[in-house]
Each structure stands twice: as C-alpha cells, then as structure tokens.
Image (cartoon, rainbow over all chains, first blue to last red; front, side):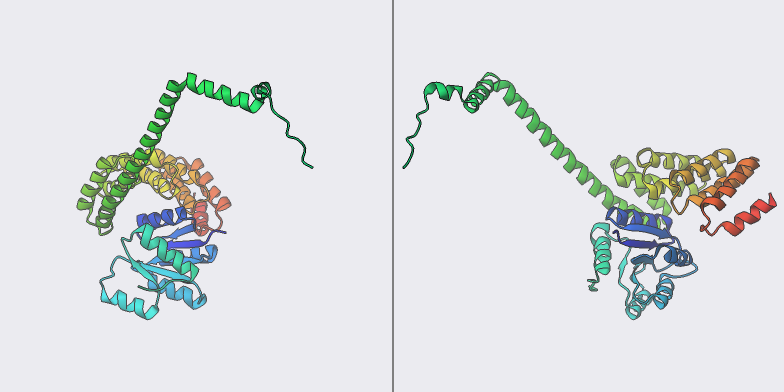
Length: 126
Length: 222
C-alpha cells in the first residue's frame, strides 16, 4: 500500500512541484496551500507524513506541526524553509526537533532521502 | 554385460533431422552472409543511436533542471523580471524537456501578474501542448487560461475553460472550486441556467468541499 504524504506550501507552484515529484516516487500525495486548509485535509486524508513549508500566512508550518502533534503525537512531519539562514528558524527547529530541509532542495537526493528516512523511522539529522 | 554399440551409417547421419537442419542453416548463412552482415550492422547502428539519443536527452534534462532551479529560485523570491529572463532561456535552450514545460507555466503566471493576459494565455497553452496529462499542473494551467479570458472580458469562454479544468480530473480536490469559478463566469455571461446547474452539481458531487454554505446562499439569491 502506498504511503500517504500531505504537502503544504502557500506557493502553489512549489506545492505542486513537490507533490508531483513525490507521486512519481510512488507516494499517494495530497496538497494544501495553507495551515488551516492542511488541518482540514489532514483529517480527511490521514497522511503518514506531512511535508510543510514554515512561513505561511494565517498559520505557520510550526503552528500546524504543533497543532497536529498535540492531537497525534506520533505524526511524522518534515518542515521546509527558504529562510534557513535566519537564526529564529534554526532556533525553533532545534527546540521542536522537526526534521527540515532548505528550499530550493534537490528533489532526487535531499527530498527523496529525507521523506524515505523519516517514513522508515531512520532519519538522523546531519 | 554391455550391449554392443550400434554403428551409425553415413546415410543415417545425413537423414538425422537435427543435422539436416544445421546444414540447411549453414547453407543459408553462407548464401545470405552479406545481407546478414548488413542487417546486423543496421541493428547495431540503431542501438548506438538509441543509446546516444537517450544519453543526450538525459543530459539535456539535467542541464535544463539545473538552469530551471536557478530560475525557480528567482521566481519564488519574487524577482520576477530576472526570473522571466531565466525562464525564457530555459524555454529556448531546452525545448521539449520537462523543465521547459514548467518554465512556460511560470512565464504564464508572471505575464498574468503583469496584466499581459494574451501572453499569459499563450504560455499556458504552450505548457498544455506537451503536458496536458500532468494533473498537478494542467488544471491550474487551464484555470490560468480561464482567468486570462475573464480578465479580457470574455466570461463565457472563461466559464468553459474553468469547467474544462474541473471536468478533466473530477476527483481532484480543486474540481469543486473550478466549478464554482465556472458558475460565477456563467452568471457574468448572463447564463443563469448553466450557472445554477453547476452550483447544484457542486452540492451533489462535492458535499465535503467546504463550499456548501456559500453555494446554498448563492442559489437562494438567484
């Protein structure tokens, strides 16, 4: 059975690029364009993994991840950001402990690997 | 005690079906050796050309993806003028690649944002020419054409494109939203009957879309 991945990004095109790539990698993929939409989609789709952007209007990726983990503590979540140089983001990442990668990321190597590792429970931060 | 071995006569050897077959094949090979050599050379040539073509295509795809990564980075950082230059280069230099298709789609978005609706429509159509079955991007590309038509004051055509976008992948999560856009455009084109039909279709087919309350309100007002 295919593993289910929910991709969340407020930039429509980025969400679609990642979704298309992951679908070609053999995952069942849905997308959402903001945190609130993701919460609704989460309940319908029940994904094995959420891959979410951090900076989004209305509800950030951290807020989304925290809200979901509160209800489903074992939910696997990967965060992505285009602002990795910002100390604030790195600090939050440290305190929350969510795996994350920076955009733009190489789909074949970075994204495929992190998704596979997190789903298999083998993820080790570099 | 061992049985004495039966001697096989030359005549029997000549009549053995396997030997006869082997001799026939040998004769055929000798007779058509030139044609066989040419045939093998042609097959070898085709294999070499196929390998070369696949490799060049892969190299082109890789180079296109590298250029596209830079162009996309500019686009996502909202540096649209620079992104447009980079995307145009990808389209010109790597025609037929996946990246060139994506570049056309993003060029459509940039042109639309700049209010260049005819150009935007042409880019979306360019994308759809070779990617019509990519459900992640063909739906927004069709919706993009619809939005261009709407902005160019052609609500009837806009409605038809939105409807086409919705019907292409009816199970897609975007389908009810595209139907809603289509209905809005039919209303703008004074085709209330068609609009009502689509609003009802949303209620019937997509009860979980989150649009129910809004659509019921619109239907009541019509």
